[in-house]
Length: 163
Image 1 (cartoon, rainbow, N blue to C red):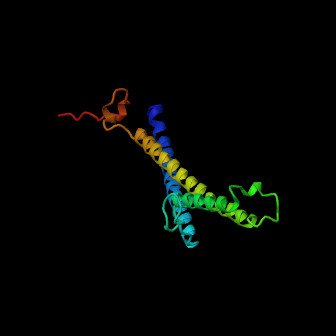
Image 2 (tube, rainbow, N blue to C red):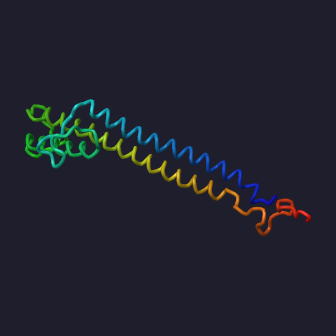
């Protein structure tokens, strides 16, 4: 048996393991995406009517969360005269608590946007592993005419039957 034939089972096993890992990653990424969306939906946050997009919709996707952060930013800037939370040094400013809350809300929503992105990345990596695992398994498969291929050992070739 040739060295190449000895490597086929190893490559096939490696391909199977890579396929399994890819499936696990892809399913985990999809489950994470669904879980994040469900968790956001439980908060019952609706995109503000003056948001740049998705007005009035329930926040359960990264795009809606992003749109709501932009609406919150606009409301905070309108209340504070265009100042951010970091620019509020005077603790007696009446707008400070509202701008502080807006900053925390925006940070929380942006964390969910990042989590959606990581979930999508995991799905992409899993899909890549599925493709590589499938390629490894197909490369490890013996050729259809392995018995008659040039270089095959004599004991692998079919024996001639006397007439």
